[in-house]
Length: 73
Image 1 (tube, rainbow, N blue to C red):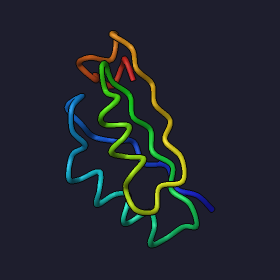
Image 2: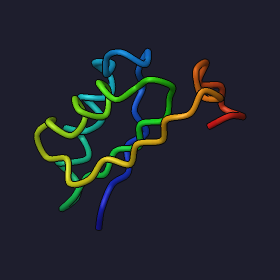
Image 3: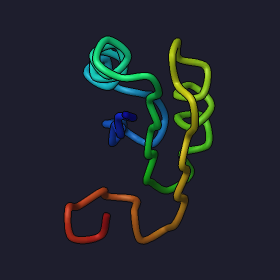
Image 4: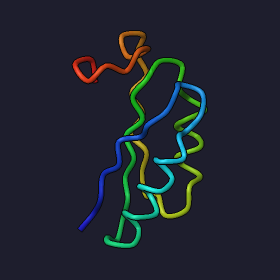
């Protein structure tokens, strides 16, 4: 079983809650994938990729995701 974490961030830094969600995912599953959706959010995707236990990062970078509304994501 794998876990999917949708990253919470400000397009520059991964939020502490996301690190906690990744850790929780590692505790309950064999692999943790992280979705980073934003605009100019490469640093966030890099931070997610380097987090302990992350198997894969799915990075979606688009200007329409700058404000990260639920509808856009």
